[in-house]
Every structure is written in structure tokens, then in C-alpha cells.
Length: 347
Ligand code: ADP
Image (cartoon, rainbow, N blue to C red; front, side, top):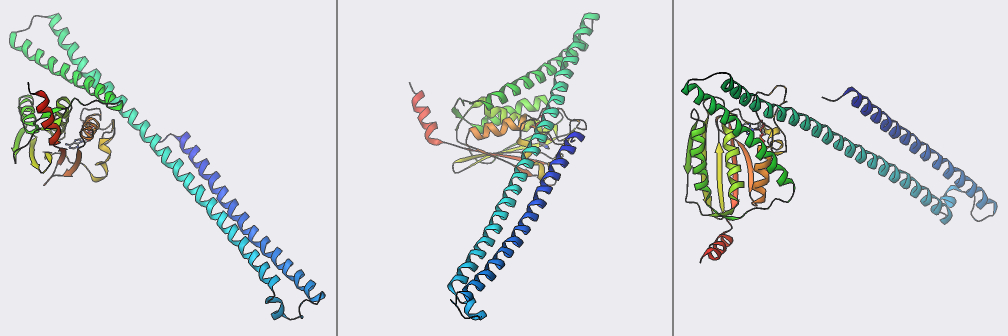
């Protein structure tokens, strides 16, 4: 929401700009009129003098065909074009200036909004696992618990520490990606990597249904295992998070030519077209932090996109049928580098 003080400032700026435009339009019209008056006065004087000096006979035709009049008319027309040209350049520069200011202003407002969303979400994301862990520890301190109850509380506390750990890792990784991120390149088999992560996901989300579909054989690619794992984990975690209780998630992997393609599809809430670009921005989350129910920081897809870009790959968001979202990641194989690495590693 824009603050009233900002709105007043904006209205004032628009008022000043509108006044400048009107004033300039008025001065241009005045200049046109004065230019014409000066031309007419010069023309009449010139004619009288030429007749007085007997340079031409006193007829309209003789005067209008004379070289002196033709020169004067040309001068007058050039001045008219000059006024028109300057007025257009001024109006155009002002319009570009207003557009640039507006664009900068909108960027500022969006950045402030995202910063606010980030602070709200990060405070929540930090506070809620800490509160849960504290509650578990206080319960242990206060009384002796039966074995199964203690085990279930410990499991919950561990899950919360894992959440905290992921948050801290995401924050560190995104800070690293902002400075020069060095990929630790080695041959990776993406199909194997996704399959391994699938096993972890199935154990972590027993209610969700995961289908892994390896459509073709997949060559090793050069890649950073930690970075690529983070891509797969983030996409799968989002698929679960934005699908509700019984998530139905499919991952397909295939290779065509020099490109390995991975798709993560869900049947969840879907993403509207106008949001598809923005979800990759840092801290961007759809909706506002006050109304949103899911947990998150808006860092996941930013990290995913940066890592895919660092691998010279591409990411796209598509609508799934009948509902939900497909995230498609394409990574080039870089066969030569894989071969080179294999030769380097030979004893
Ligand atoms: P976070 O999940 O922490 O909010 P992300 O950067 O991972 O941040 O995602 C940005 C936003 O994109 C999310 O807030 C969510 O609104 C939307 N989003 C991401 N993945 C999905 C998905 N599979 N289905 C629907 N919406 C999604």
C-alpha cells in the first residue's frame, strides 16, 4: 500500500509536470504567432522599400516572384520548423523523464514491499521453529515422559531444526549467489540425482504421491551436485507445499540431443500468467504476507533460477492439465568437459 505522504508528493509532481507542459504549449503557440507577425511586418516593409527603390513594379506577382521575398519566406518557414522541432524534443524529453521517474518509483515501491514481506516471513520462519523446540525442551525439563511420547516430541523438534537449517542455508546460498558464485563442476547424472532425492521426499512426505518417470537414457552432465540438488529439492518441496494435503507429484527426465530436460509437475493451486515471471525474483511470494497461509521466504525459486543460469541452463513455468504447475529445467550436457574430467581423473 502506498503511503498518503507519497501519494501527495506524486500528485504534486504530476501537477508541476502538467503545469510545465501547459506553459510550454502556451509559449510555443505565442512564439508561432510572434514569428508570423514579425514575418508579415518584414514582408510588407520589404515590399514598400522595393517599390520605393523601383526594384520591382508595384504588382503582387512581381513581389512574390522576387528572390528577396523567396529568401524571407524560406527563413520564416525554417523558424516555424525550428519551433515545432524544439517543442517536440522538449515534450518527448519530459515524457521520457516522467516515464523513467515512474518506473524507478514503482521499482522502489515493489522493493520496499518485498523487503517488508521478507521481514515478516523471516521473523515468522525463525520464530515458529524456535518456539516449538523450546516447548519440547521445556516439556522434557518439567516431567518424565513415556518413551513413545518422548520419541514423537524429539522427532518434531528435529524437523523444526531441519527447517531452521534450510532457512539459514537458503540465506547463505542466496548471499553467495549475489557475489561471484563458483560452481564446483563435476560429472553428474541428473536422473540418478533426482531418483535419490525422490527417496528422501517419499520418506519426508508419506501422504504425498511421487511418480518418477525416466523417459530416455540420460548422459552425465557437468554440474555442481550441491546446487543441482538444491534445484530439485526446492521444486519438489514447492510442488508439495502448493498442492495441499494429498499432493500428486511427477518428475520426468529425458535427454534430447545435447540437453537434459527435467520436469516437475503438480496438481496444485497453479500460478497465474502474470505471476510466472515474478516468482523468480528474490523474496517474491504470490499474495501478501498478511493473507498467505503457506510458510516460506520467497528465496527458493530465486536460488533455483540462479543455479540453473550458472549451469547455462533454462527454466520455464507452464500450466499443468487439468490444474497445477509444471517447472521445466533444461541443462546442456557439455560432453567435451565430461570426457575431459574423466581423462583427468584416470590414474
Ligand atoms: P516460497 O515457497 O518460500 O514462498 P519460492 O521462491 O520457492 O518461495 O516461490 C515463490 C512463490 O511462487 C511462492 O510463494 C508461491 O506463491 C509460488 N510457487 C512456487 N512454486 C509453486 C507451485 N508448485 N505451485 C504454485 N505456486 C508456486
